[in-house]
Image (cartoon, rainbow, N blue to C red; front, side):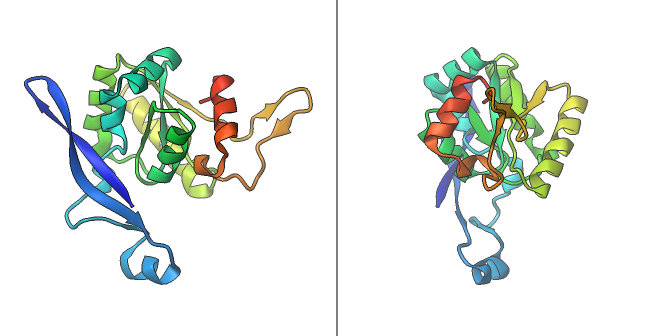
Length: 187
């Protein structure tokens, strides 16, 4: 279960507000009955960016964005949780493998408040993630938002070691692996 927060802006001051709680089905039966993700009635996950409030309100997250020049964009709350556990705070999730048009105002707010950082997409390594990342990049190009992508096929060192195929999304990585990727400037 994750708490999803949004932002309220009053007289130019941003504050965090709880929008919903979101949980993931843990069995095929639950997923069939209610879908993969469960939220309070009326909540539209496609219109939100998970962790946006922390990204904009937390000085450490803002500083990481300034130092790296980018914001990581991942698919879901589990990815954000693993990255935060590894000390990576400049991250938001689109809550699926599709960047919806409804997220555009949130991306605009983020861009304005953080002085136009690049977005570095790190979607899952599966077909939905790859397709979603391509579609998101096309949308962002049309919206004049700078974007980069994480290369799952990158090889490291003189032995050209690749990311193992069983690692399919950011939350599959260990904290040490994520910290190493950050040290190398890849995330």
